[in-house]
Structure formats: C-alpha cells, structure tokens
Length: 273
Image (tube, rainbow, N blue to C red; front, side, top):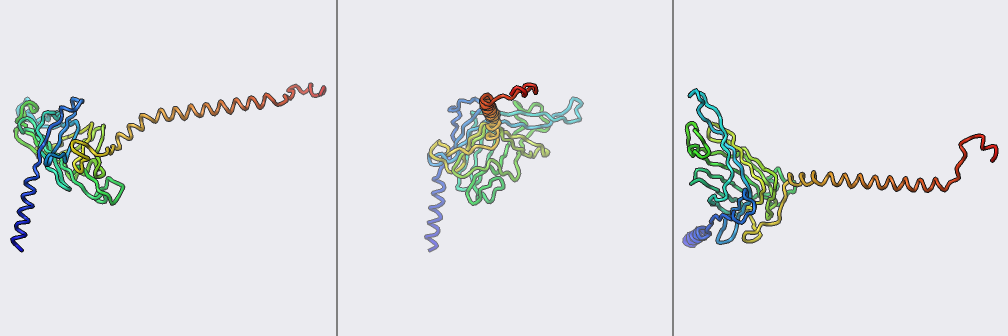
C-alpha cells in the first residue's frame, strides 16, 4: 500500500514537472505603442494573459549640493514592450513576472481566485471571482538611466499590503481604459511607490481559448465616463421632447379658442346685444 502511495506521489510530481509554463511577449501585435501584451502558457495553451500600459513613479534620495542634506527626486518609468516574461498558473493562484534592463527592474503581479463571499468589493455572493492580491516592484537605484546620482544605491523591493483589486467574475476578463493606481511601500525607508495601469484587459484564470480572452467585465470608471458622455445627449433629447409637447399643447389651445365666440371687451357694446 505504501509503495502504491509512493508511486502515486511520484506520478503527481512528474505531472507537475511536465506541465511546463513559459512566458510569451506578444506586444508586437498591439497597435498602441504604449500598450504591451504578455501571456503565460502551460503545455502550449494560454493560461494567463495581460494587455495594458503601465507607469511607475519611484522617489529616491540624492545628496544636496551642500554635501550633507538629502533631497528627494522622482524616477519615472513606462513598462517597455520588449520586457521578458515569466509566470505561473494554478487553479486558485497565478502570477506574472515582467522584467527589463537585464533584471534591474522586475514587476510582479499576483492573482487569486476566491468565493465572492470573501471579497468585500463584489455584491453577488456565492460565485467565484478573481482579483489582484499583490503587486510588487523590485528596482535597482544603481541603474543610472533612471536613477541619477542616487544616494547609497542598491536593490529595493516595494509591495502592496492586503490588496484586493480589479475583482472580476471567474471566467471573464477585466477591461478598463481608465487608470488604476496602486501604492507600494518600499524597503527604501518606507517610500511610497506609485504603479498605474491603464488601457487594461487581463485574465489570469479560465481563458476562453488559446490567446483569447473571456467575456469582458467593464470597470465602474469606464461606465461612469460613458454615462457622463451620454448624459448631455439624454438631457438634450428630454428638453427637446418637452419643447415639442409644449408647442403642441399651445397649438391645440389656439385652435380651440379660435372656434369659440368672442365676447366684447367694451361694456357699452352689451347694450346692442
């Protein structure tokens, strides 16, 4: 019996090893020069895919001109389309690692699938949802193309804490043109790092088919923007309808009063009646 269990465990371990996962950069397919497309594939099938543009703002210290005080500068990044991709896909946990500049910069995004009852951001209870559970950025202030004259240069890691973002029903892809921003706390004296994503479509679980997203789930910000765009048109139509109704009523009123006998306004005329 123990031998059978050992063989079963060995077969399970072998199947895990055989489930090869590789990253693929598809950014050349994007018509938007700022938007990257990355995929993670397992056994030649897409299991995670992201399309987005990313901006990162990192504060760092430099020595002041007096050689004593420290002042804070800002390093600004955009995610390059030529980045290298790695990732992992699981039944309830997935992640994608995006690195560039020979590993000087590394953006990790972690996803989890949970019951909607575990998420405060989703009203429908009892169904499965997925979400971003963690965002992490590793950066090296000794890399001088972005960090100029950094004080005490070295590698640092910034991470979110207790994150539950972009909550989406399982089997669907999250779509949002509006900017989504995350604040990460850095190991460099607890500095706040800003990571912003926009023009987003991503799905970390239950892909519809190879390189194909599931049904889109649009973010609230896009819905609000669409309402703001259509609201003036709707109000204009309502106002036009009110004017038409008012003119129509006035027209009928004139017709009715025209057919009625007119009483003389001068009282002296009543004597001749």
